[in-house]
Image (cartoon, rainbow, N blue to C red; front, side, top):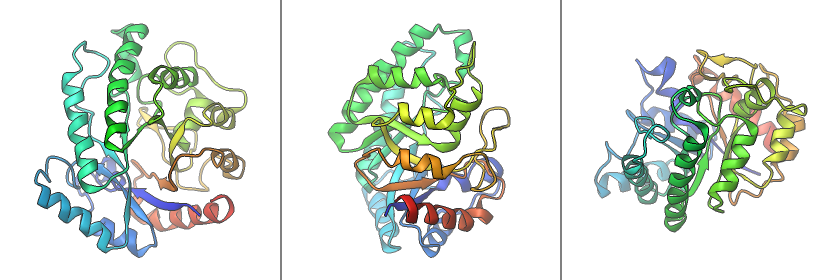
Length: 298
């Protein structure tokens, strides 16, 4: 059986930005619903490298989670203020990555999430070869340093960020070429990338075999899994809509046996309700849906 966590960012951004759910309330509810852990959105108001700068504060946060019987599945690092593609100087990005990597080490988080930061429209001003080189060169450094720290590095590809075509994903994985680097497979993003070609520059790269074909192509390269449904739309024309289970188009009975073929080196599945307006209300029903998948495929 897999261990089940949920991303805390669902309760702090988007519809919750003006009235975020406190960290203490989130972890108490998560524990009460029988989750095994939490995946931390490492930005205010929840714990992050900047609001917990001291070792004693980080130790207390680590203990707070452990006291509720919870573990950490990963960190969504706040790198969105950085520039990865539209600059030759990656020093600021690397400094912020290292700050978040140390935070993972200090509070015991085993995985760090990254993305390509800039939207796919960046190719209007930066050519694709230059963009690719900047991403790969930077992530080679990050993946090696994360490996030395004992923290997995997972890239979440999605319509809202550059390099969102299936061949883009495979090429970057091959070019970074580090066993500590893999993809964070989010089911709704995978559906939108493979089945709709959402926000793909130029000619859309839609796979005849849809989400299952993409998942097969990524076999062995997936090191983190986010589970949520997709209704085939974008949220605010930017990123995939994270639709609660049963309200979308994904056939999880077809998908999960293929996902199970990935030896990720850990046993976590994470529910992602990012930008869902009633995330707090539907958390329990999503946990029950994943529990059923866990019984069948975990």
